[in-house]
Length: 441
Image 1 (tube, one colour):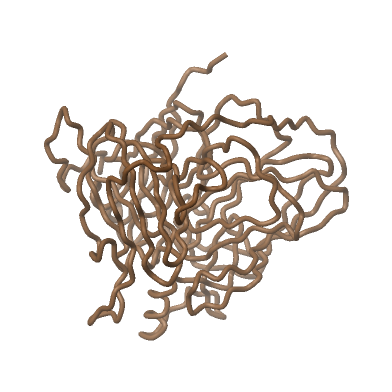
Image 2 (image 1 turned 180 degrees about the vertical axis):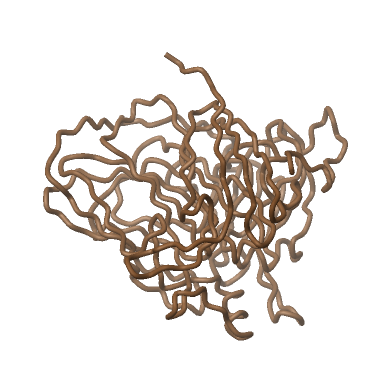
């Protein structure tokens, strides 16, 4: 029987506090409700989420609801919302139309606020034939700390390198803890909802070679599970996997295998957490052969309606600039509600970039001229150097200013993003940058 939709309300207070990432190692974090990550927000598909944000930080902030198809005014960017100043509050209110794994994070001074802990997970549930014995939400992150456990400040050369490569640290966290230990029971199967919340770290998931099943990407179920032993998760992406069953007494690591995203950084094998398998318990898990139906938005040869180039261009001021169509933080052409979009997104640079589209899911029609290995709904997708993807998406009736950008946070900050407007043909008046919604006090 279908459950009635309801309103689910949360209070989030952004502040600075001491956070112990492992015994004897405490940092001065920024986050929500005195924890890193912030509290998990849970609702059911069709519910209305109401989040009351109070800002007790020493600087402005705002929250972006990554992956959720919400109204433009609630997207949490500077184009649609005035930043929430210290001492102010703001009410976010929106319906969650999709089940899956999502997350929230600061979209103000992100290179500082996100690394210090300003993020959290969102789980939207629905009735399903998929049954597991338990589930875990795993938010992956890293921090660059000094020997005194303070966030490392860099000189001019270091800042330039970080601007080029993105910020990666050697303190690896799962759910805000370093060297975390996770427990599960032998014989059981669990759903792990994995979110890469790092600024720039590419995470190639490995369970020390043990196979797992990938069942969802960016919050949406795949049509069929994929059995894998390693899986790339770029900044901003989410993948759900089914882990287990394992044998009693098994111990293994959750780690990231080396991935060369073509920077000055050296790719390494990075341990994140350990899993210990406890005594055996009976399983009630059931994984249907077919998980969902994904109807294609467009054929592979659909005509392109827009071309987007992600570039690293020479600059007199910065040596290099990160651009979209050779502009930094530009304004792209508008799109009309109900008109299918087929975008060709090219990475003309010599390094990887994860492309993120706010507020909408897309399907990849081609990756460098070839159909993808599987059908999926995405909002974040990696572009390797000198490659092109072709994506299709539909602007539904949520007019306003939206954004797409590279989800390496330092590249976004350095200019690799653009805004565009979705226009309702029945009301073609421009949204304007000053049309802020919500409540301040």
